[in-house]
Image (cartoon, rainbow, N blue to C red; front, side, top):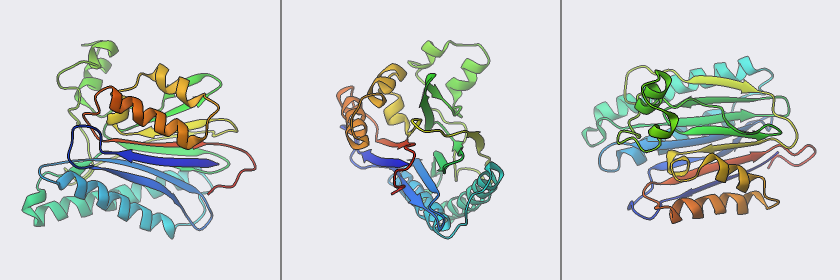
Length: 249
């Protein structure tokens, strides 16, 4: 299994409120994390950085994930802990009032991949059937699409496209969505913030992921296109490719 993490401030914003990374536990299971922070001043940066730090530290001392249930239980416990810490940090630091972060994360091993998400950062899978979005956005426009009030095409240009309905740290309690898939040789997972998914179509993502290039080159191509298409937001992505027999790190 091979993986690459990249993040970029973009062409408009002065600092990067995205965070994340690729981490391994004692059994060499992989955890991929993308967090897109939000809030006044630099509060979004604080929220995403705290999320990355808390979850990576917990993961480092975790044990082997034998089943999807193990992975979902671990995610649920740690999302609860992170949400509690962010919520109460903001309460005691007025400059961070209202801060929060989206979260999309995946636990991957040679048997399965379990994905957790809160907000509008996304996870896609590329396999023999093509590229498919695995997560549902917790956003206003997604709800409007789900209710049949607007089309998926209309959602792409809706003025409230970035209104997130669920985030880590903004409320006293929050729940993540979970999905487990069989992760097989040749499959690719893409985790990203909306700074990428807003700027590349699924067709563009699929074409780049299918190219016979190193993961780093494919990731850099995506970042470059997002910036060429405006780069108004921070851009973060992780690509994980299942290669049987390859080293995890």
